[in-house]
Length: 183
Image (cartoon, rainbow, N blue to C red; front, top):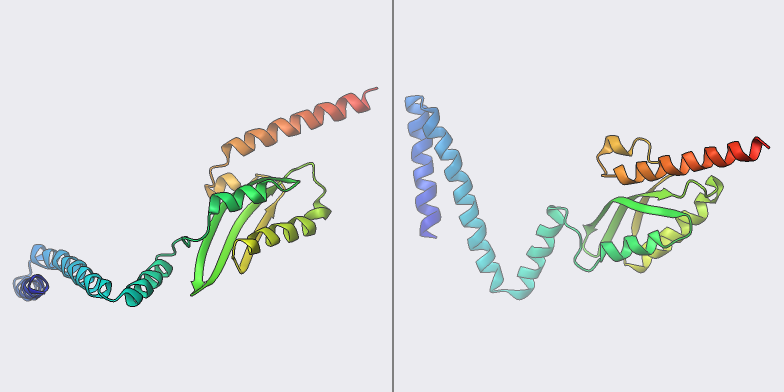
């Protein structure tokens, strides 16, 4: 507690001195001391909360929600793998699983459908994906079902390998179409 008091006192003195003398260096250092005081204060609060198990757990949950962290009870890799095992699903990317409120989870994801799958089958794919997501304890799902990786490179989803695969599929499809129609 003494550290917070001393740091905060010197911070106030530096702010007053900085404004009085027009010293940007003192004001800037006071800003650094503000973050130091906040960090020490947060550490002291955590130590206090640690003495109260239920309170500490609740504080941790709230902090996890505030930093938009993935819930610990959700295995995102397993979830994505199960979705990718569905017929017609090529890959799942840009996945975000978060806690909206205590015990209420949400997921957003982009799902690339196999280009050979009929677009009209999208409703069945989405229904199957939502069933898998629900089994993982996630209550709200927003899925962007894609039939091409075009545009994904602009969203920085690291899909260069997908774009190369799609180009190969299109080349093979054009070649097959050419061979079929040339006879």
